[in-house]
Length: 84
Image (cartoon, rainbow, N blue to C red; front, side, top):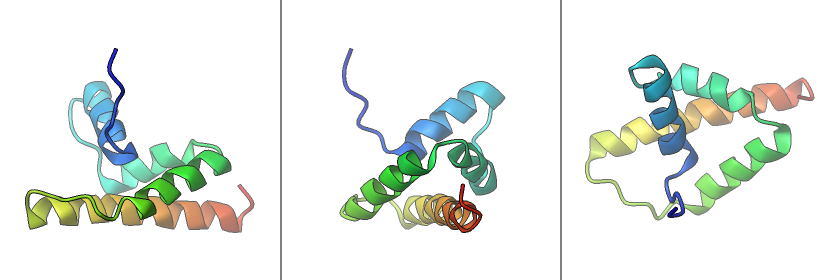
């Protein structure tokens, strides 16, 4: 089996599409992200920060990715403030 090279957002969107039959909203993706333990969330956010060289085919795709990443960072910050 080949290694999955997609980032967290792409993997989770594909999973949600298979579960719900549609793509998740940024808020729904953030709720899925909140299920991860603190260390896993921090690791995913670090990977995303290090992967700023990722190229998008359109500005719309880049903006979509930014909205998802922003929702995940906001959720992580809220959870961290309540020690979770």
